Length: 321
Image 1: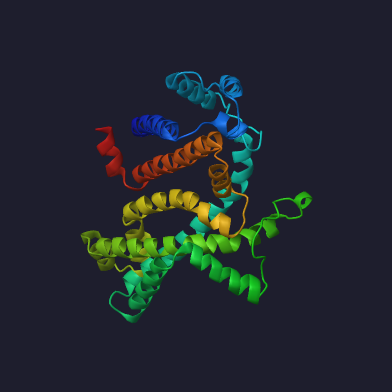
Image 2: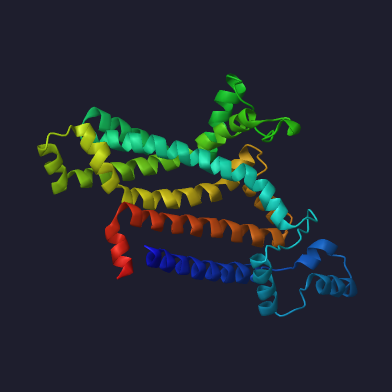
């Protein structure tokens, strides 16, 4: 197991390094620079040169890349042009909204999808299976931003159970609290979870049906185990490899999809931060936020790989060999 984890960790580091090169190169190709954004179109060449020197823009690209990566490794990030604040501080503040939102959405997705997928598989070609598949098809067809608007109209405007947008914070000092914070994130989490639940339900159903055809399932039934015991005690664990793969992709997708939903609900999260940074051409924030999101997605996939080996030791043996 340590050798397996070490190999996956090396792959994680190399992927992260390659991602940093791509992010830096893409932003380098964009027209304009930070000095021009700060000083405006009417800036003189002398003031532009002075600002570029201050920001280090007159250095070679390789040097600026090395300084950027070296700063990240030491926990030092750039200074936002728009906010005049270190990007690390901005991202830490915004992650307090985005990560709980993604976790809530993922929790709803997993709970609903596993239950519906297993139920549909157990009722194959029956009314229950048809109903679940119809609901999942509807979930796939609904854009999450449109569903978010419908949820606002129903629960915030007509029923007035929750607010239509905004985030009160996690503490009473900010006018919120744990309960108020969860209430503010509930509708966004539901909007994010709808499409992901539909996808994971279908994957779970397919994986469970494939596993039900295995010989060990017939052996378990022959030993007198009930269908429920076979499903939850034997089938589910062996069907989790494809399900975990999709779950890992979905959690990363939930974090990145928050850009749209956070703007619909006016939530001060990472998505809204990067949207504002792009609008302000604050490329320092854009670069660090994109790198953060990429690192989170890669980290999630690394964790999923480790879970693979825990669920199915054959995969661990294959990597070790």
